[in-house]
Image (cartoon, rainbow, N blue to C red; front, side, top):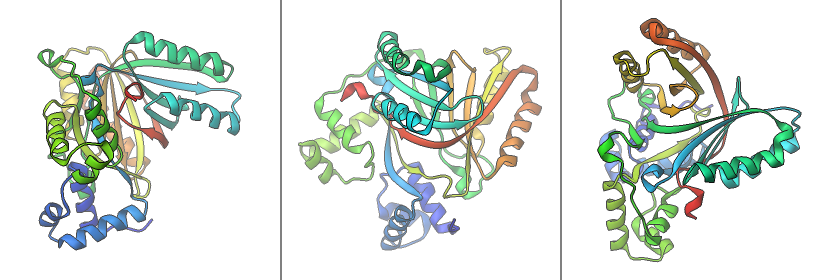
Length: 327
């Protein structure tokens, strides 16, 4: 791994906060010229640190539920594993290999429980001989955090991006048309694309693109623009921690959530129906750093923690917040 210097890390952080910032905007914040920023971004892409620039979409606002399914396999050879993953890539929005209690973590957007039932039943009818067990949860809220650890901060200074609904008065499903969808589809893995090219690819005008993007952000359908990073290239490991609590309505639970909100190494946190009460993900330099996080959480909040477990993410096969059903 080539060690990045502070300027590179500052650029990565600014992209992580808002990948649609212009080179000039980033240059002013990091103290470089526009051309130098552009050169360094291209170098980060060529070096494999940045895979692409992704648009975060709050698909729950579009009327979709987020079903998270863990799988533990048996009697599985490499060829069959590749076949299973290829099948899931067509149906799921998120697929990750994990080490620990489970082998694979998947996320599927579905319009309702019946649509998800049909997907999981189709999968099990084909591959049940290879599935030892599986566990399904429904994500109700997902927080996406910025990577303050890139700048060695002791706590976060930015607010997370929220997928789902925070308050009851916000339980409103939005409708989008074909033009909105085309724009979202173009932006999905091209979050830094300029409006002229977006207009060309979506078959509309620059003015329409500008207006629609602003409207999608205002309605909280688009919740952010970020680089999809290869964290292993940055020298980090990716862990997931599950917490089961004694009292899920207590003020102490809010304290745990606030602790996770502020921790510089958190990258996602979810609340779910089924499974753990809180699931949070950390990107850390090594195992010991992650164990220190667990120890601190147990020391601070052990009285309401009923149980916990953790796993390590080792490979992400797919990650998108645009439901397959919209295509």
